Image (cartoon, rainbow over all chains, first blue to last red; front, side):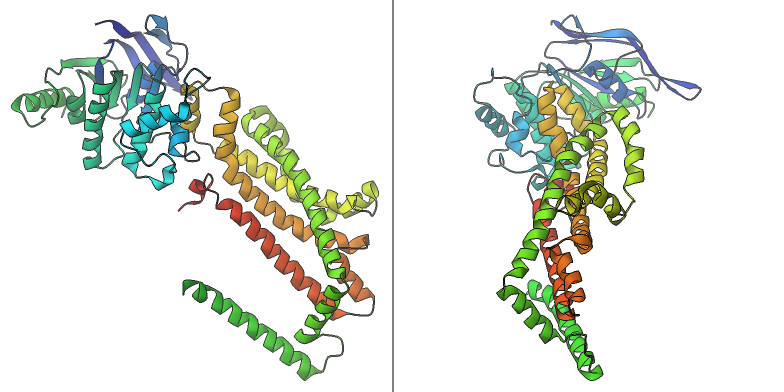
Length: 246
Length: 252
């Protein structure tokens, strides 16, 4: 596997008043091309800060992030962030949202491309609807489709499904796996849901409490479609939870 | 049925008010204060000789000119202040001081600078409407949620696209609220401004009717027409709030 993202010894602290709060403390990680890596950690351990640094929205105090061997200086359309609360523009309809990221003229028929991805995530017939007319699950689909339209090589997912109810959460995971079957992306998923990580990821990284560093790494050897009720999956879950101190 | 339930009570109260008014005028045998019927006949008189449309037209023209001028100045200025921290820090305190000054207080200066023609009321309306719009627009820019700006940054869109597809539509609901407030104030001000020195407009109609022979029927007719037009103008701005691309902001 070719290295896609190389994270080298990044550190980040925030200063508030006289106190310095170390949030990420010397973390190194390599993600392969097409790999699905989940990062699990206790809440407040600096997961989201880590994701912002990897996606380019924040700079580390020391260390660096390289994508395809190129140092990451800022965010770009090569890696799209999908976050908990989403950022689907409420003033644009579904089709306009999907076309948002298509800059320049090299995309051909933008509307057709948008509609193709709308259909792919199961939004056929809703292209002209506005976000306030859609349910939470459908909004998530819009967000995923909007990311896929620009053909990013990496998806950064920061607790993407945690605002959804349990049933919709499960359904969106299955959908995501189906979409990744069609178009393989490198995915970095941040979650506090161990089952979600086992369901989706090839590899699970367990973070330590703040300042975040890698505490343990688990390979997930199960074939898709996965069943979480198997004894092997249960054992893996118990092992991860033990690492998290639960 | 629901519509009837909503319109019936206010209509009933209105009818009652008119009845009481009528009764009081008849009982007190007032020589000056008109009955509702006299107000209606007075209004019809104005309609017949065409002067009513002239007054309404002049007032609306002044409001329109002053208001549009304010939109042209306030929207870009508000957006700029919202985006550029330095501009906000510098200009906001000044606007906060100017804003609570009643536009009526500007009348002497308006007459000094622009004389007693159309320019004075247009200037006053501009003064009245420009500040609420600037403040509302700048506040609107400040309340744009980070996640939308982040997403735009993530997709690497141009500045032009950032403005036309993110910032302006995100602020549009606030702009419309600002415009609604402004237009309401502008309508208040035009009537006051016309009372000073002009030869046309609804404000002039009211003052002139009183000065020229105590025609209180026309005074009241003028007041009622001002109220109705104000209501219609507000209704017009409310239509803007129904646009699909801004409805997300005002709740379901």
